[in-house]
Amino acid sequence: MSYSSTLFKVKFQNENSFHLHGKESEELYKLFKDDQQLNQLFDERQLKDLTLFRQLEYTQEQNEKNLISIGLKSRQIGKTLTGNEYFEDQTLFNVLSKSIIKITARDWNSFSPEKIEDTKNYIMQKYPQHIDKVRNIKPTKYLYTNYFFDKKSKESKNNKFIYFPQFLKELSEHSDDKNREIQAFQTLKPNERFSILEREWKSKISPILKKHNIKLESFNDFNKIESPTFLLGNNRPWKKYKFDSLVDGIKQLGLFYNNRNMHNIVIVDATGNRKIYHSIIKDKFKKELANYIKSYKLDATIETTYFDYGFNINRHSIEARMGEKFIHYINNSYGFDNFMPIIIHSSQNNLSDLIYNAIKNTLHDKRMPSQFVSIETIQNSKKLENAFPNIILGLFSKFGNIPYVLQDTKKVVDFFVGYDVSRDKVNGNVRNYAGGTYFFNPQGTFHKFFDFYPDGEKLREHEVKKVFPPDFLRGKRIIIHRDGDKHINEVEALMNYFKVYDIKAHIVYITKSSIARIFKKSETGTRENPEKGIWFQYSENKVMMVTSDSKIGTKQPLKIEYLVLNDDMRFEIKDIVKQINDLSYLYYGSIGDTNLPITTYSSHKISKMMKHGISFENIKIENIYFWI
Image (cartoon, rainbow, N blue to C red; front, top):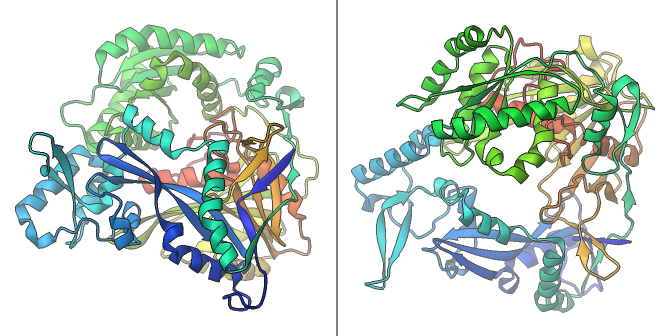
């Protein structure tokens, strides 16, 4: 079986090429970005008030002078833009992420202050999760005005809404059939993606390469990491040979660690619809959940209750209703001293994020983990059948059980460490909220957590000391998994720190936003997704690796960069790759796998929760996976 990638080595054929010495990919990148033929949009599709496009995308690999990635991107814009504006303003589409670019320029001063305040109030009412963002909006010159088309007069007219650019993306996201159609257009299957790339390559890229005497060579030396061996009940080994085989293994051999704490569960209907509660949740879902738990040879007492938001739905009211009164009500109604709530909510509710964060925060303050399940999943039999194993594994881990672990054989690492900081933009400035380090044993079980609230972009000495405590780590060997690209200042600071405190440390930067793809060529010649574990090395300490078993769209590999911070021993790159691959199976909220190792996946989840006010400080969370 052969594989190919969309990461290429840049080779210039002769000295008459336009390039500057040692900057081949940089020059080619500029050439591609500046060439109007290469940058034009194609595959246009109109969906009601949205216009969708595809275009070629080029990425110069960081600190690599002769590498470039070529891929496809999908864009969506409001129907006020025809696509012609793109050629007038090359940076048009940055509005979807940066919200700083002129679109259909409407001068701020042409709108009355009352009209602007009306718009703010509308957004705050319809999208309360963005209240803080709206309040912090600075006077800006440009707005995005939504239009509708009047068929009778055959003219475009303003409707009553004026949208701020930073809300364009949120306002164009839907959870109905329209959104599914958008996703279908944006998500390309491997053969379709490869065919489009091949077509555009022949018509646009090849002529440019020929004109400037450039050759692009792809990587051909691909390797495969096999799935690990797991330990289940009584330390018995088990291999994952198919998608749900770990579930089969747990049913046969039992949990790796069972603290016999699978007791009281309360299903809490937070949909706000009593008809749904009585017809679907109170009897049907409760019975199916009980039967599923019994299939693991475990028992639980399950009850149901209805949660009423009240007239005023805001974070304060939700937290008040889900606080002490709620817990006392369950205690008195069912005689439960301790219980696990399963919150049934609607993922299509505009207040979904608000409800989730408010309830999570309140229950977490009571040291009570919770499980969320959408009513859309429960109402769809197929979805529920697929989701049940994930729901059960999540419950297991939140009750303090350990479903399975890795079979560790080498024992050369004391801890794998996840490290992350949650950030957001406020008035154009990056603000740090919270971060921490998350220590996992070599077998992948959670061990310890240290949080901190950073002062700035760069880690300060007292912050480093808090998240990597010398008393805890002195003489130990750790491998840090860091989300994102390498930070030079951070590397230097960590090197100095670990040397002073005699901590053997390594760091692996894991970037998930790479546009590079890997394709597998089938016997019939079509392009398919490569299996999990396929990787290739493109630099001395860098690899591309497929870590997902997802069947949706085209898999996107991780970029991995490995550095030794303070140790006489250096790991082989294949060992680093295997560690990341194996740890990607350890998220107990899914019977599948995550594309990230449990280290960075957990650190990202927890820091995001901390950003929303959910504090993990001074709480013992060993073996209790609150963040799932």
